[in-house]
Image 1 (cartoon, rainbow, N blue to C red):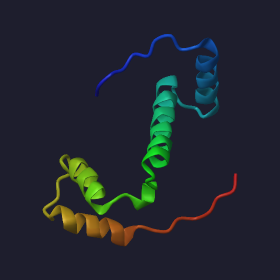
Image 2 (cartoon, one colour):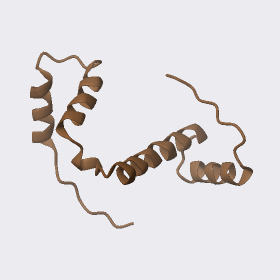
Image 3 (cartoon, rainbow, N blue to C red):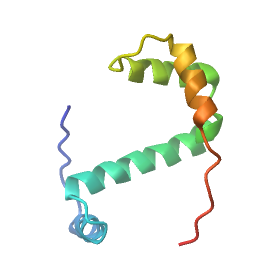
Image 4 (cartoon, helix red, strand yellow):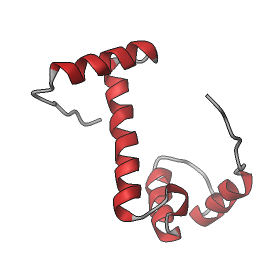
Length: 96
């Protein structure tokens, strides 16, 4: 997996990350990855006008096709995707 070095992180920012990682019981590396992933999702949704759940079918197929490269299954990609959609649930509301 590729590595990335981030330099000149303000002390205040690094301290906040360390506090978050300790609070959430994650390593500092895992916490930074989570922050980057969540930030990217938010940025993409706001700037591309795309809701994560309303991504185009073509884009979703491309993403799933990339993921399926390491997945062994005799079915065609479309059949697996249809199966995934069929087994999805609406989810539930949670108050924190």
